[in-house]
Length: 326
Image 1: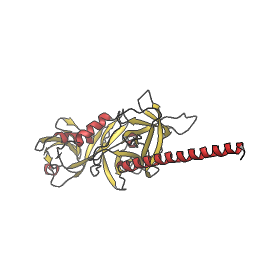
Image 2: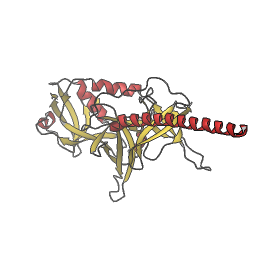
Image 3: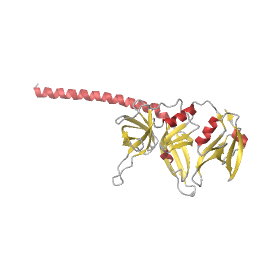
Image 4: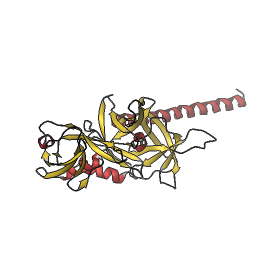
């Protein structure tokens, strides 16, 4: 066999061996990515916020669709605050669709405008132990696994890399754009640890429209928020009032809480709360978000008597209620 042919056969043998080895590496990567996605799938939810203009009931509604991450056994879901955009001009109805396609009513727990995230409270959902967060910093070139709702497909998985950190706000930019529906989607590192939330995109040039890279707030930046939620998860105090509230926007632009349901036989029912009552204050604490009332209840001991300021059909009055336990 001519020497030139031998060299060609040898080169082809090396190429085939390298290709086989590469396939094995890719298969291993596929298994790792698929395994991480399978482990976190039950915690990834679809968040929907429906808005209607309170000044025009006949106007068509707007529905924002995004993604959220179920954090703990109490039903706290973290998402991007942009999913709830429009709250200042319309009354939102928020729902969460879990991995089994079940729809749950969601209440706004808290909003952090600096981190651009929102925390929802979904009483009918639970997820077991708190999720493990990434402790180390991200770095340019790190792999990032985004799991979220993409065009109605969820959980959808996208593998990308971290580009770098923005100087103006400390958020991290990813290499790929955020698919519609990925707002609020959780990001996981190569070990499957929760590493952040997609909170937006980098603004593109108006003259040169193009897909904009996604922006992530990291788990380390979210640590104070998650610590507060974790403290609630570990609290064995089962104090309760027995009413459900949802936030709504008042005519002056402020947020208040309206009672949506009162459980029969509960402390709230015995005290005389009615659906439609607007809760404005508990003792000396003003309540504007679900978090204000929920935190107050969790800090209170069963048997404590509180004075709750409400508006009922526009008339302000106080109701005395005794905190119960369950």
